[in-house]
Length: 152
Length: 152
Image (cartoon, rainbow over all chains, first blue to last red; front, top):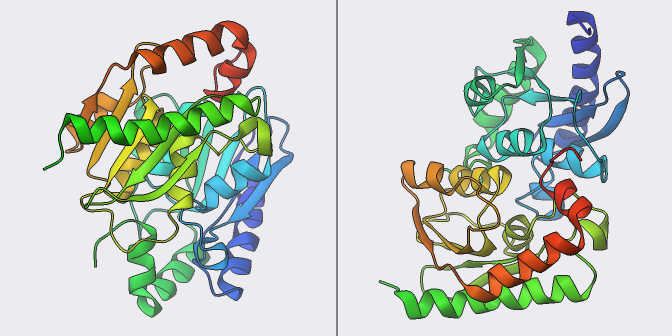
């Protein structure tokens, strides 16, 4: 069974993605899909700005990057920010077993709903994740609201 | 206010997409995002096979095709098949106002959850939609199970 050290390692991959997204002028949220043995199956970051693609949330980008999989049993989605309803629905529909969340202070999505539906949810409350989102939301509130479907 | 005739017209766009997907050897599910005035903002079909992209469900493809939008208030997602949790989450997160469903006999996703959360849900129970999915599921059960995350 993986433990906190593994979760921190995986979050490091998601953080690299989030930083890359911020450097590109995008929404700084990154994610990775981790296989049952701890291997990185896919990784990605939000690409709303970069690709003009509103469906490219971090989790969806990582899921897409992993390509077609016959089963998601035993996989983990690690993400710098609590998953929105869209990305929570992704996790539930495809039977991803675990979600590791960098932080849920700046945004609260579907993590409780996932836990109620059998997904293991781990919240790391990581300071760098909080700082990155807090800074981004303060700097670009309109872009942030657009990314989560909040009418301005 | 739009009525059944509008819903049927919009479903026609989703059906064209589904037929195109089937002709390409893909999963025959199509969708369109309709603006508040009845205009087609985006349209698409499942592209799991065509692009090797497991995130490209019909609804997500249509949402992506519409590009960045400031608000989804008053929009309708029309889809040939009841939306799965992933696509239901999309509708909820982005505040899409209405979902028009071709049929929910062959698959039941998040339509009741959407209705409980303030989304108007219309089910047309369309015979062509049912025929297309029934034929596809019988012909390609493994591909269908992969597309909805059911372990075979």
